[in-house]
Length: 639
Ligand code: COA
Ligand code: AMP
Image 1: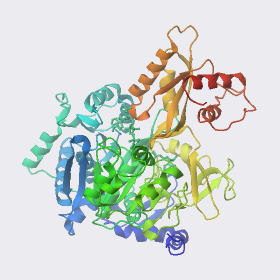
Image 2: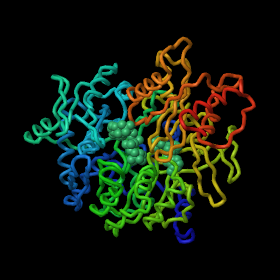
Image 3: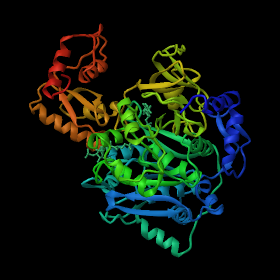
Image 4: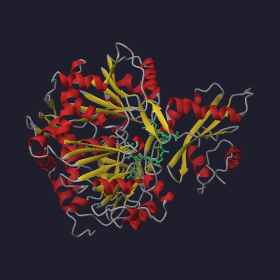
């Protein structure tokens, strides 16, 4: 790793000099039906649009062209499921194309056409990937909802996307338990105002779901019938600026934001990243251990590797407990993966169970070159540990659902730059990073402020929120005119390295999962005995952060506080889902507030995290903080 031999500075400077030339060149890696009239048209959309006038099809680029050009027999997807008895299933590009063509025909028979939305509420099974590509094939817009979300969250997303069809499965598999998806789906449809015309349900052997006549259809039977009748669907030409998918992510309220991903720019940016950021060659095996419900899974389990002609590993298991802390090394060795992309929390879990990394030696990792981490800040001790036990580069990189790919990273394909533990390294081409204060004034290097990106955003980044241009402008472009607000705080050092330190809003990051504390507060406040509440993220050795809810009971509540605490914990699990990891509710007599009535969340967090804190000058009553300390101490926290 040498800054002098890396081509990064030269490539980044090329982009700075001629952004349209740069992305126009990158776009040659894609098969276009009609090339774009303009690489970038500043007159369109909220800040301009990429590849306007171009038409193309993502499924064609991810499957058909590889089959046509010599990759038919190459593995496209390896599904490895320790949770399903260790089953490994491989699909070649040709086999996958056949599955996708047929499933696309099934969707078309349900009346799904270009521009229609299709919601997926699926576990980590190959059919979920087929479904995403089948939608792309016929120009439908998919919206994948992570399986760890509860019925109410799913209902909110159904009401916003208004899908014609929903694809789901009888169950997901978690260690020691079967998660029945179908009852959650039924509850969500009952709660939602928008009703799908049809649901296609994959019956897994572990759980047989009840199907409702008229609405629900058996996935396997529908696909088998279509195959028997020889039905297939061709790729539909779509505009490069049309949406490929909507992916909901936590905003500052309980209403999630429907991030829109366009078609052309998405392909161009992901292709560029596979070679230049991740240093992968077509035909190599790549493993992204995320979930298709998250943006990382969309981009790097499904689209990136397939567009690029690599082999993608899809893993239905955990880093530990399936069966042990050697699971990741087993998968890398067995499938000869050259790189792994996962969240730091997974490595914290492995480190906890196998601190000396002894399980690594039990597997042949000769093919393995690089570990990539993202989803939350990669804490320096975890990075150092991973480097020490793996003897390979460990690359942190920073991104968001909104951007669809990396904002700042270490471009291994261009020659890696020296790693600084705790920094996401440097901006990728397309991102002009700045650190500003509240008045958009640029801050000197080394000073923490708001991390913002000078507009326009690069290809693949969100053009808007689904049918909510105004909310998009308000959320991302209003506070710092001319810039995209990342809502992350950090600084840029003298070498141009970017350090991402935390969110500037009430989003928390729990085990790499992005969650809104505002959304959880809404649930707590709905409990009949709760007068007031505050949810904040407190430090956790394994998950980085976990939510902690402080509740004030209504006057006259006679129920023991412990009982209410249990009830609100159960309520968050029921309304938001297990993914929230909300296990800690603490009853306090009052919440600390400023004289203008603002809850002092930052001070509570510092006390809970054992960080130094000072008495806020604006506090209404300093004694309240003693009560908070006592309540935390009673739960063995904050002391
Ligand atoms: N469907 C249903 N439930 C799910 C689920 C899914 N797809 N995914 C997770 N859950 C449940 C888990 O079973 C757990 O339930 P529990 O409270 O009953 O134990 C809960 O949601 C929280 O899940 P998670 O935070 O992922 O923790 P975990 O205990 O399952 O695993 C680690 C712990 C460290 C192994 C885990 O944090 C990890 O590896 N996470 C993956 C990180 C990741 O992929 N992030 C994506 C961004 S790159
Ligand atoms: P998500 O949209 O779920 O991908 O979450 C995005 C948020 O996760 C970012 O805004 C950051 O707060 C955090 N994040 C992701 N990757 C990193 C990283 N490498 N370093 C620091 N924070 C990160």
